[in-house]
Length: 325
Image (cartoon, rainbow, N blue to C red; front, top):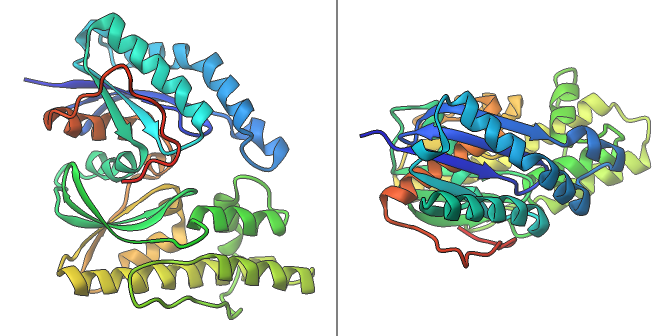
């Protein structure tokens, strides 16, 4: 019997709702983005994000149900992001999801945003199953995760300072490339050469650090404002990719697992994707570009596996902005 999950995502600056069948088949995935609004400020303003979520969420959910060609009564559960993210933004989607769950008398599935990014790959690759290694790279997280089962995870390494997406945004800002920084660096880097030496961190374990390379790029730009920005972008991408792959190779040796899955917004970077496709003695999976950034389909997919595992939330569930995996 088919299972229909309504997913709701509002952790940052995208208001999204989606209906996913059996965890893998996307019937609708409506995304209302606020990028043009936050461009004016060079980054996400939490209060403005929350206000726009409130204005948009009801219509976005209704559109998701309509595009899926089902009725509210047909869904089996409501999955909504409760962390990590901006607390005000999270509360909008969570509160709406709780109200919908109560009104429809359907189970509420509080869903971890990081689990959602991992689950985006289940939508792209119908054959993908745990166990595998996931390299999570987003604005708020950089981790190597051993995905033991659909709802069982072990974090093998994490960033000690800046997340990789944060480093991308700060580097783009210092070069006046605009917001969001990741796509701007990706586009400009295609016209450059990786000729600039940048520092790389080395830890005995599988942890990361991106503050050093971020600071090096900022200092180079300050000292030489006429530096070739395309070359700087390409050099930054190359060095960051080497840091990521260096740790992934260590994780493969440590665990013996050769299935590598990319997740998070930075997994949309074309240079990083190409480098992971070149991995020898391992197979790399990465989500469709439209599923790399925040969306509700990934939340519905992750919610589906939590639903099967009996991980049901009650209406006292609260937003947890610093939620960990």
